Image (cartoon, one colour):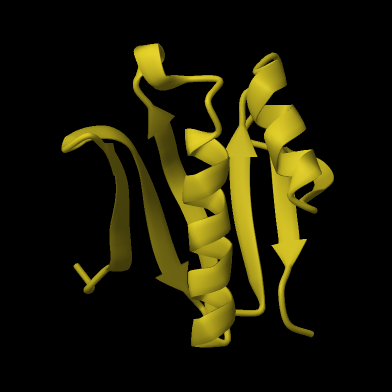
Length: 104
């Protein structure tokens, strides 16, 4: 079993954790394995804040791209990733597969 290079990013509001994102680094690229915002805090831009932080963090690390998968019927997530510049490149494991090119 090898060592996993990953980071957990979490967002708080008024001292309470409201969301988190797990970034996994492999082969010089990054993948978002989990983005979660607690139900009472959804629709308030917290998911976007977490993703923007992850993108900037990867940019600063020189990571060339970020990949993620989301359920096909998760309209809010699909809109979010498209609005952040992620390209829908196909399906992976039955999910929409998105990639954002950061560095070429």
